Image (cartoon, rainbow, N blue to C red; front, top):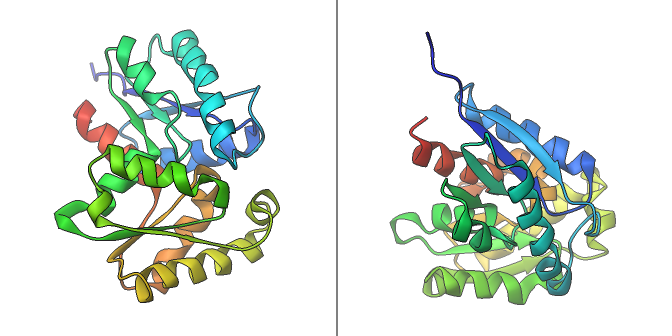
Length: 220
């Protein structure tokens, strides 16, 4: 008999079921049949977390979801860029927990690379820099470059989002000297998938980075 596939719970701290479905589909594609991905959506958060207060406030519900749905799962992905609740889950849950922010920064910083972040949320810049510091990667972090306009409106408009993120990524490279660029945010995952062909440096996709690292830890 073959062993059952590992089951990974992807928790979306944003209260958008559509975003959860999109991220689950991307994560499943990254698994190449090596794991099953199931999604869970926060209900008390905004549809898109755009500032530090909402990011911090979302952690409690992320932890509640892990406690309620973690049984029968082999790993958890926290799919918001600030990794809300990930540290708390690790304190009581014995299996691997990966946040997309940490996963993407570790991937971007591999081999000593300097890396930047292209994203849509100016009110999260301080939280992003704090995460790089917590991971011991501040010296390699070249900073965050931002799109213009309302983050939620831009994220909902793929025709505008992709070129806006591409411009921010180019600024990371040409102005800041980044050797890799992270597309910072779970709701930006589809745009991140499409950007790599426009660049010679690695464009780091947080969902893919989290899946890769979690599968490694699960031995899948």
